[in-house]
View (cartoon, rainbow, N blue to C red):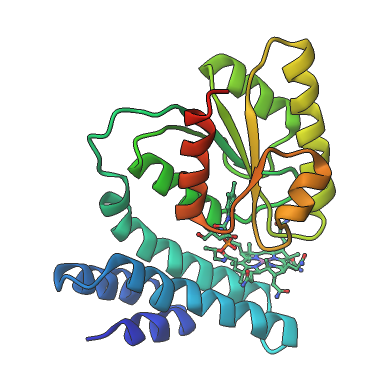
Length: 214
Ligand code: B12
């Protein structure tokens, strides 16, 4: 039994095996971060490379994603279980036109694990949905995920709409963006308040926003 077997099972699209192997590693006390990074996410990176190279296609990418999701469900309780007092409320979603949600879900789990109240709007979320959810839940932060290059203009549109709502619709939220096509420079360019490279950093950055007092 090893983390390598989890990686292999994802590469073979064996959803049930992935769940069982992750459970076995968790029971054996293996570091969750190791399971996550070396077993699950690593495999998706290689799947993405094979997709780029044209050696596998969307159905395989989807099966690998489902296998990883099955593993994440086993890890979820370890990431979200907390007694910490809520530092604030975060609205999270993948921007319009983009259906990728594994990274977003991971970010969401880590926010929950840090005690934040999380409103996850899912994928393909349009700007108005983010704004309405922030108003209804008195949120401090809106966090946008995107995996596609075409999500970058969507993020820009969404951040612009949120900034406008901050000025004209009595909203008071900070925006943060994440996902492989974006970086800190892009975040600054589109007027987002922050960019974080991964889920743990997103939580630290969100805490810093709140401590700074929005
Ligand atoms: C799985 C997958 C799919 C699955 C998604 C299933 C799902 N439920 O999510 C399916 C099969 C549906 C899919 C479809 C498509 N995909 Co796809 N997909 C992938 C793949 C292999 C893995 C993505 C993933 O989950 N990674 C693991 C997670 C954990 O990583 P992550 O999302 O980057 O998240 C981390 C950070 O980025 C960050 N983060 C993420 N979100 C946020 C948000 C905030 C606020 C913060 C702070 C941080 C943060 O934190 C996370 C880690 O801690 C990638 C390749 C890759 N390596 O990324 C291609 C990839 C993203 N897909 C790609 C493409 C082209 C497509 C399709 C267009 C293919 C097609 N021809 O139909 C469609 C588009 C569908 C749509 N409209 O969205 C391209 C994108 C190219 C581009 N630059 O635009 C990639 C890069 C593959 C490639 N190499 O070409 N895909």
